[in-house]
Image 1 (cartoon, helix red, strand yellow):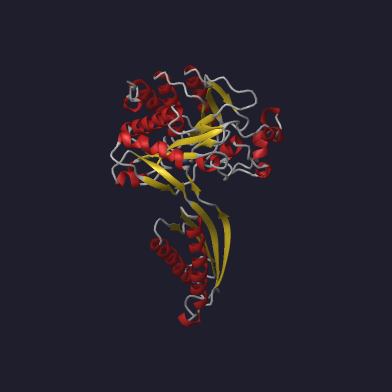
Image 2 (cartoon, rainbow, N blue to C red):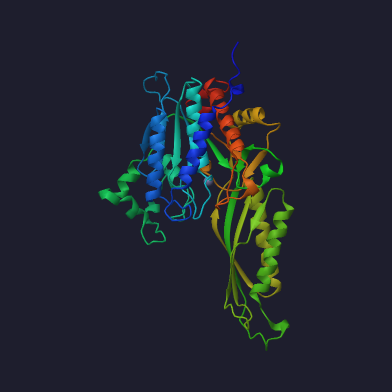
Length: 433
Ligand SMILES: [Zn+2]
């Protein structure tokens, strides 16, 4: 009788190693006393070096590509058909961090992927596809305020225009990539979509409080929310605070305040919507002058593109009305319009059946935050597993996922790869069906 593979427990040694590695990477930083790892930093090189050592010890073939993604590959034993690329399943996340970061956002996914491959080997499981563990070089965008440099390169979609980006320290991305006598353009020429990509699986901490609120270790992501960012510019008139009657004022800040509340009311009225005004700039910003101009930031997200677009249109009308009543000019500048990224149904179903084995039910979540999976989804089916994090806290040193929850995440990932290996879902060069 075939042993039910998922009933096999995760090797405690593999789990202990995963924990120790999380701790170790959590201590590799560009800044003393806090965890900060930006793109192409010495800390990233040291982290990649450790990944290479661990991957090599596990019998994987390590490389660091031209942008700095570390890749640990395990080839399948299947003899390839000439001219047909062998299918490739990618497991990973990112190794860069924000400033003063936690230890789990990113590295948890990369190290769980590596532990998954180690567990498969311990079980003697050889999938009929190659498996690559990837630690992406830049997801947070800390250095150049442009996220996903690593995964964009990985799929061959790194834009030449990005070479002109300038970081805080005044150095351009072109200069960073041209170090050691190389030419940035040749780095770009090296990028190409990996052959035979059949799918990408990413484990990540939730970065929100939902799993904690329902008391579950893990959950499956249904989609990464679409996000629109805008700037709202209100123009009124500066007047003396003591001599201008209330009737005669054109106070830009009062109009902006009403609009902030309208944004909140709109988000509260639509299921699953999040909207935030996080920045406000007032001119001339003096206690005895009626505010003349105000600039607001707006960040608004939803899992369905059409719902988000409708909300943005309604808010444009509503804020224009509120401003007009006060004689205030209002201009919207749309800075960024992303579309929602639905996760692949079949791959997500594979994760869901794994989750059913480790807990009573399967929470399904929309990710309000962006992830490398959103980039990978442009070229292959993707799915994501969220691990509960304490208090929903992330991008902060207090970020924490418990060893038990991490074990659940590893168990689900290992179960999913076993299912794919066993052909529970058909795997072809075109993806997973
Ligand atoms: Zn992340």
